[in-house]
Amino acid sequence: MSKKWGKLVAVPLLVASLLAGCSNAGNNEPAASNEPTASNAPSDKPATWIADRKIKGLIFMGSDDQTSEINPEILAEIKKRTGIEYEVEIMKANKAIEGLTAGLASGDLPDFVAFYLNNSGRPEMPVVLKAAREGMFTDLTPLMKDTKVYSKYLEKGYLPNDTNYGVMFRPEFNGSTYFVHMNVNREGGKPSKLIGGPYIRKDIAEALKVDPASIKTHEQLYDLAKKIQAGNFKDNNGNPITPIGPGYWGGKELGQIFADLQWGDTDQWIYQGKDGKILHESQTPIAMQKVEFMQKLLKEKLMHPEFFTIDQSRAEEGALNGSWGIAGDMHSYLQFNQDLHYLPLGPFNDVDGNPYQMQIDFKSGYSAWAIPSTTKKPEEIVKFADFMASREGKMLWRYGLEGRDYTLDDKGNPVPKQEVLDLKESNAAEAKKLGFAGAGNYWGEILGQTDTDYMADFGEESYGDKVSGASELGLKAAEFYKLDEKIANANVVDAYTPKSFLGEFATGTDLNAAFGNYKDSLVKAYYSDSKEAAQKILDEALKQLQAANLDGYLKLLEEKNSNELTKIKFKPSR
Image (cartoon, rainbow, N blue to C red; front, side, top):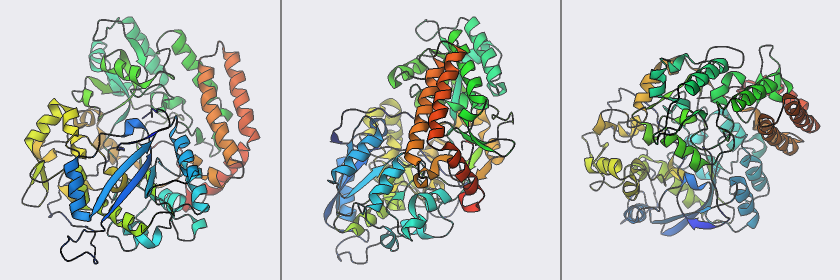
């Protein structure tokens, strides 16, 4: 999702990350306990007691990844169980990495910091690595050894390779680690049930008698767009629609809708072709083929003129109004489409013409946190994070308060109250004020969203399944998309992204800037006046890549890919 930012200012707010659910169908055992304990807790305090202190975090994430303030009753319960007075702030900036860089440079940091980090190839990685190398962060390895949940990170085979060797326990640190990668599933090879990519209006597909699953190439997409254009379809307000609209979260490059013209993953553009050679897209004919196709769509008004640049609010409004015949990118958990009036389109073949095969990460991570070296008693922050990641902690920030928000079944699993589900349906904003993830408030994910297996822990994969009898979000889309069949035939990988090794490459900073320039150059080429003008733009972008030693980096990737511990994934995982 795109991130929208305001001025550089810190205000008390909370943060949400991606939904993640792991299935364990047929689980009939009582819910397992993995609660942290405090052997030094006062005799009149619960076993989860940590210390009578305040813990404050500074979050370097975007405003669309945050929710309302933490519910006071839940804050009081945290205090009662752990002794911790908990508070977080978010630093806003034009870009997340700018806020992170400025925040770390200031040296004025609270008890912990959290930041985006999908993988070791994200731009944040060199920034936090530099901070770790300069002694700004606490070594967390000895502090995790005595925890119940985070100690699993020290077990062989628990973490995916990139999280283990690329993010946390890097060889250069000799067993130390200075940041914790979050959103790691307890068991590997279990994908999220979220279905992302292009969606087509159901009424249009039915009117044209088109099976959305039959659209597998950009040529078929073009023919479909022409039919939509000729059909004179209208939006909810009676206005003419655009055949191909932007993604729900605003303008950007969308590989899923042009996958057979996408050399590798979006924003990576590095791929191993049929001949086994690793190349960047700019070195292949695919780049110009893609540009010519985009120019064709734009010229014939089959694509929204701001497909790659439109702001999120207008893109979202267009999707809600049905203004796009095809929405370039959505996902199955969006509330407005739970009736499935937009249907998943495709999936498309890959760039080599092979039929689509789902690729699943063995495990992956999203977001991370670290403890500044200036923090007093950092072991208490780790213990608090361990509480948040335990079943008891997850129960609190995911289900709310017993009695107020849920009851317990005979296995000790939470059963959401019907009035909470009704409130969530009728007034989502009011439901969020209850202050837990099931009601739409995801404050607890920053320190607690890891070692996830909701079926094993709570007897249901998604919040409210036991009450509704079905997965709350995305069920219709999953059935239509035949998701279970695709998962059964998926390729499970445990590998690095192509950009993961920029931090150890001599000209990595320059090359990363050149990658960014290529991304911008693609959009300029799409909107250029002619094929010749577009080719000139791409040629200049390639020159910058080559000046930053692109060929040397691709050679490094060949070496890394030959090692089982540093295999590269060249296709997006979905």
